[in-house]
Image (cartoon, rainbow over all chains, first blue to last red; front, side, top):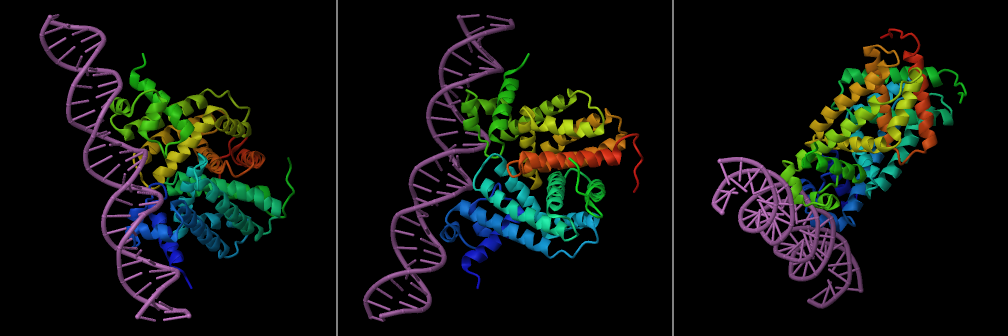
Length: 191
Length: 191
DNA sequence: CACACACTGTAGCGCTCGCTACGCGCCGTG
DNA sequence: CACGGCGCGTAGCGAGCGCTACAGTGTGTG
C-alpha cells in the first residue's frame, strides 16, 4: 500500500515538474496539494529531504519509461528513438527538471549536487542498456551514452531557442555520426 | 571613461561567476563589492536589471574570448580548440553561468528567459563565425554550431559527474564525427 | 474507560528578501 | 553665497521563507 508520504511525494513531483525546482517553496506547494506546509514537514524531514525525494521520483519515472521502450532497429534508430522518448510526453518535463537540478548542482548546492549525482548514475546506466540492446559492447555503449546524452541535454537546455526542425536536424546528424562511428559490426575504435 | 555603474556591473559579474546566479541576493553581493544594496538599486533599476546586465557582461566576455581564438588547422581542430577554449580559464565560469541562466529560463522565469535568448544569439553567431573561419559554408557552420554547442553545453552540465578523460573522449568522438560529416571540401549534405 | 500514539490545524518565530523613505554631504553653476 | 542635483548611508517596510511549539482529534489497545 502507498503511505501518505508516498502519495505526497508523487503529487509534489507532479507539481515540481510543472513549476520547476528553483522557486519551490513549501506553502504554495502544500496549498496545491491540498495540505499544509506543516504536514509536508511532518512527513518529510525537511525541505531538502522533500526535494531529494522529488528528484528520486522523477529519476525512477525516467528510467522506467526508458526501460519500456521497444527495441530499436539498429543503432541509428536507437538514437532517434531515444530523442523521441525524451522529448515527448511527460518524459520531457522530467528532463527539464533534471537540467534544472544539474544547474543548481553545478555550484555545489545541496541537496541538488548529491541527488543529481545519484540520479544521473542510474539514468546513464539505463541509457547504456538501451544502446547495448542494439548490439553495442559495454564500452561502446558507455561512450555513445556519454556523447548522446550530453548532446540531448544541451539541445533541451536551449529548447526555447532553437526551432524544432533545427533540433531534429542536429539529432539526425548525431545519429548518422554515431552510426558511422560505432554502428554495424562494432569496430574497436582507435585512439 | 567607466561610469560607476559599469564598475559595479563588472565587479558584480565577477561575483556571480564565482557564486552563481540562483541564490544571488543584493546584500551579500553589495557587501562583497564594498557597497550597499541601496547603492546597487540606485545604479540599477532593480534586481532584474542588474541580473540582465551581468548576463550581458558575461556574454560579451565570452564572445570576445572566442573572437580572439587563433585560427584552427581544419575543422576537427576547430572543434577541439573550441572545447579547450570553453573549458579553460575564466571562460569555463561564463559557460557555467550561462547554463544556470538557461536552466532558469527553461521555466520561463524572467529576466532569465529573455536575457538568455539574447546572449545565446550572439554566442551562436560567434561560434558559427569560428567554424566559418576554417572554410565551412554559412549553413554548414550553423549546423555544426548547433550540434557542437549543444554537446558542449551538455558535457559541462554534467561536469562534476564525468571524469575529464571521459569528456575528452566524447569531444574527440564528436570532432571526428564532425570532420567526417562536414570536413574537407565541404560536401553539400544529404537529407 | 484510560491511555498512547499517529496525525493535523493554528499561530508564530527568526530570518532574509527586494525595495524605499528620508536625510546628509559634496560640488558645479547662477 | 544660495541652491539644486548627484551620490550615498541609515533604517525600516511588508512579504515570504523554512521551520517549530502547542493544542488538539481521531483511533486502536490495555
